[in-house]
Image (tube, rainbow, N blue to C red; front, side):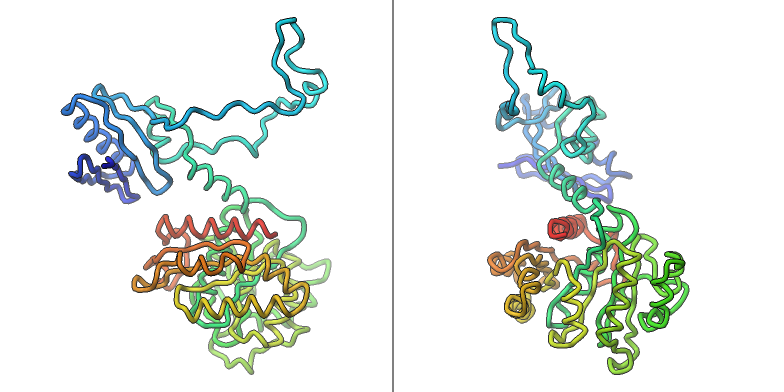
Length: 407
């Protein structure tokens, strides 16, 4: 029987002790933690012994021992790992020899290596630190921090990521918008989401509009100008739509036009891509459903990484599987993309099967598979990271980090 303390982002929380829940409603997450901890301390005093609890929030969970006198300490299930001996290092001997060879000492910098420093405390860890207790980061906090670092980096040269599935409604547009947002919020500007769907592409409907209605058709006549040495990055503001909260730009298609009225030629797509690659470090391309279309295939030729988006519907999952198989047979570049693909499996409805079952089917087909839980916020018109539940945000962060590995 586990004693569990859970605090929610809205300042509510619940503590279950001996199968008896106690609910609190506070004005802040900090105050909710304080009240919940008080409930556990009172319980420890009544039973006259320390009480072990699992403290959970949106960030992570910690195993704590709460004593009747109000003392709180982490529960250590295992001793700390043994200290590893780097190559060339040796322990001092009884003969008084130097503790460290000069060769090694000369190579050791006094500057900290940020790659191995620990993340700042958050959630319960930060709360307990303010009370004077040190628990250390949880495995989940370290994992999240490593994912954030992975998507914060900048690569030498632009990278293009294509979001694919031959079925409509499989989650391509949400994946395009939210992956773009994750990279832009973590790594700064220079991220473009491009709606490369000429058959009623809806990326523009689900993202913030700028002070104009420009689409890719308005960019086409300006490609030569924007590729000249004198062109300025700010000139692009006339044709792209900046996302003020999530920090990336959107290049829209026009969903009001028939595909025959806005279809680019492969050469025109090349020109637009050249502009995107000049001004943006990351280009995420939302795609249409016709895998044999010349523009779809040209997008694949430009891609450095592909992401297959699917819901847990069997027909969406099957379409993604067949797409990977087709790419594996197309040419060497496409086969590499298929082999290194990232798959995002979203549970679009409460009634759909659990995403894990579909994910297992992709394990042997792709480099990485990430599941996204059901989230009603995904049905809202505006696709914004802050509107998502913590679990959904964590899933898209995990997916973004998987994409970063392939760049």
